[in-house]
Length: 318
Image 1 (cartoon, rainbow, N blue to C red):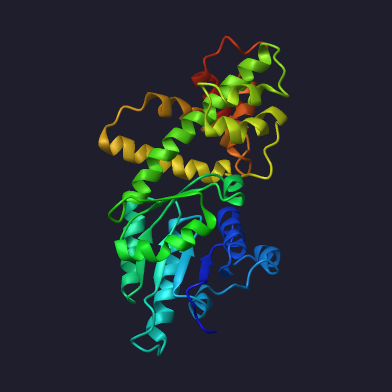
Image 2: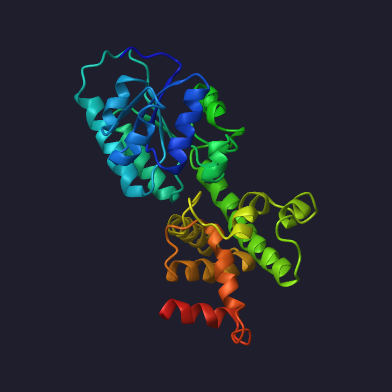
C-alpha cells in the first residue's frame, strides 16, 4: 500500500487505542490498527481502514505509528517485532523515517529500553503519554505530553490534534512520562476525594440526581468529579474507562518514583489502601470510580469505630 502523510498506524486497540483510532479516522486519517485479540479486531473492522493481528503489517501503511499497550513486556515485544521486520526488509534507504509515538504509562527505564530496541533498526521513538480516561478519549478530551526529538514531535502534531484536545511539547525524551506521573498523582487523589464528597452528600440526604451538577462549577470541582461523579452516583462501574487493575500498575510506578526522590506525598499515600481494597474486593476489571463502593463498605453500621487503615487490612486478608 502506498504511504501518504494522512496515514497512521495504531498498535493496540484497547480502551484508549480504539477510541484514538476511531477519532483519527473521523478526522480524515487513514488508520490501520493491530491487536492480538480477535474480539477487538472484529469491533474495529468496519471503523478503520485496515485491521490486522500482525503489528509489522502496519509498516506497509504508514511510517508513523502510535503504541497504546498494557505493559512493558507488550511494548518490548512490539519493538522487537517491528525492528526485526525493518531489518529484514529491502526498503530503499530514502524511505520515510519510521517514528513511533509511545503513549503507555510505564517506568522511565522501560521507555528507555524500548527506545534502545527500536533504535537497532533505525526506528525513532517518542515518549508521549496521555492524560485522560477512556471516556475522555472517545470525546477527544485528551492531553498529549510529547517528549523527544523536536522534529519528530512536529511531524506528529497533526496526528495528535486528530485525537486530543490539547498537545504539549514538554522537552527531552522522558519528560512526557514524568509529566504523566504528576498528572496521575492528582487523578488518584481527586478520584478518592470525589467518592468521599459524594458519599458525604448521600449521608447528608442531599439530592444525588443533581449533586454533581451543583458541585461541578464550584470552587471544589475537579475533572474527576465531572467525569466519574455520575458513575459514582449511579454506582455503575462498567464499562471501565480505567480499570482498577491497570490503575494499580500506574500507582505502583508513581509510588516508586516518590520513594526514590524522598518526596512527601501524604494525600497520595493515604489513597493507596483504598485502591488496594478495591483490588481485594475483586474489582480489578471495574472502573476506578468503584472506590466509592469501597468507602460505602467502610461506612456500614457497626464498622464506623474502625479506622480506614484497619478496615482495609481486614479486607485484604479476606
